[in-house]
Length: 85
Image 1 (cartoon, rainbow, N blue to C red):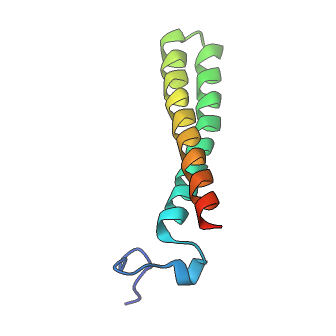
Image 2 (tube, rainbow, N blue to C red; image 1 turned 90 degrees about the vertical axis):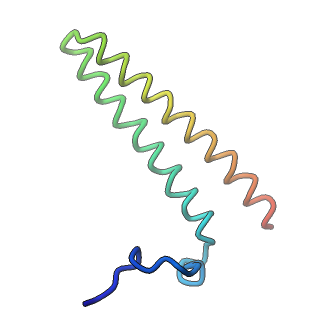
Image 3 (cartoon, rainbow, N blue to C red; image 1 turned 60 degrees about the horizontal axis):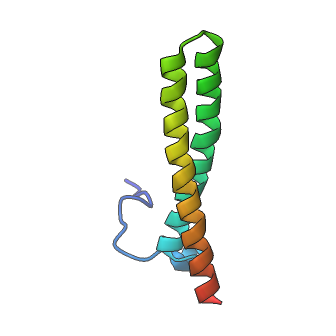
């Protein structure tokens, strides 16, 4: 049986990707936050279109949290890249 990359994470994989695991994870998280922000805009508009203000506001609050995560990730990534140069 073949082992997947996630099944044996006892070692740093930076030699494979050229990026430390921590930085890779941070880039991944940033991308997920940005993607989530876009998707939640669609969901909020869907709710608005049907007149469901409660659901629209719920998705907009969630969108705000995803934006915060993206901004925090960008700040951390910027600091890490500046310190690695």
